[in-house]
Amino acid sequence: MPAIRTNILATLGPVLIASLLAALSAGAASAEDTVTLPLTIKDHRFEPAEVHAPAGKPIALQVKNLGATAAEFESSVLHVEKVVAAGAEALIHVRPLEPGRYKFFDDFHRATEGYLVVP
Amino acid sequence: MLATLVIVFREVFEAGLIVGIVMAVTSGVAERGRWVAGGVAAGVLGACLVALFTRGLSELFGGSGQELFNAGILGFAVLMLGWHNVWMARHGRELAAEMHEAGAAVVAGSKSLAALAVVVAIAVLREGSEVVLFLYGVAAAEGGAGLGMAVGGAVGLALGVLVCLLTYRGLIIIPTRYLFAVTSTLIAFLAAGMAAQAIAFLEQAAVLTALDQTVWDTSWLLSDASILGRALHTLVGYVDQPTGMQLVVYTATLAVIAVLMKLFAVPPAPQPRAA
Image 1 (cartoon, chains in turn orange, brown):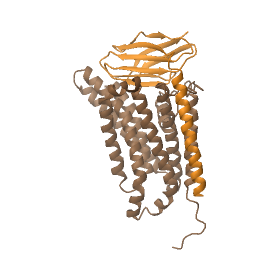
Image 2 (cartoon, chains in turn cyan, red):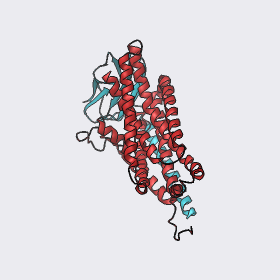
Image 3 (cartoon, chains in turn blue, red):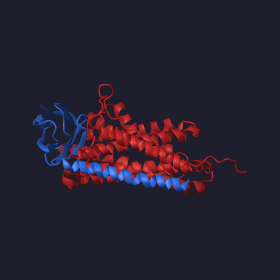
Image 4 (cartoon, helix red, strand yellow):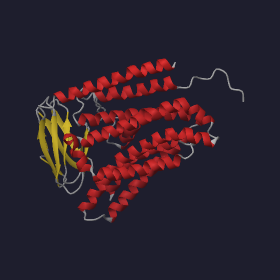
């Protein structure tokens, strides 16, 4: 019995590591054509309130919090969630998107919302 | 004040659920109060440190430091939870048998208690750092901590503790012979949910891009921003719009824990020992 256990562990380990490495290298390949979109939060409003990005390209949202309080940049459609302290700047990566209107908001101040539009 | 209360409660709520489960899992084990309290204290301290260094942390790894840090500690929590389950599958029975022989149970139980204390610390750290950042921001904006904020924060915290107690009370009414099966299942799902959340952070850092499309959308049925959605998110990892990779990792985590528990389980003794 112990021999079988060791065998399963010995095979499972490398397989997991190999698949993780494969996934990591796949991530690095597409980093070059990323579209960076600057965005600021001030007085509990996103500026601009609507940003545009081309379809099918990886996107990076560069969120600068010029407000006096911390914000939590969040979007369930975009699968992102990140605390941005007052005065801080954050880079948030978004996967390549299909055309659509994607809502994001500040989870600490729900009325603060904006849209990422992919035509 | 109400806004502060709602936000503090929302964050403390998730940590409260996890602490409640850990309390139930370890009920009857000597010294567990000290371990759980230690975990909470370490988590609060960690939360303050993370909040303090949040800007520096954010700027690491090309602006993705926060994501990689979150993914890292979540991954560690998954390992601890998985290890606890496997350990309990092996030693749970003897632990239960020796529970009244305090000395042996303390030695045996403290190993898995340490793992769960780490999980408590991580849960408190993650949610706590957001509370600290939020409250600090409000205090700074208002030029000093206002009374409304203090009251809102305190009530939010108290409600979170209440959630913790209710979870604990709700679980320990389960008869002892089923408790192990119930808590093992809960812990396995907790681990799978945390693993899927770690994947979301890796996707947000653009470290992981394979299978990153949304597979389904159940936000019309249950939004993961609602209170029930949040509870299920913490307990079983409910996400209303999961990506392919999240589903793969979620399933794999459950499968690996189940297989390891089977492999390391004590085979049922064929003949009862003479008393």
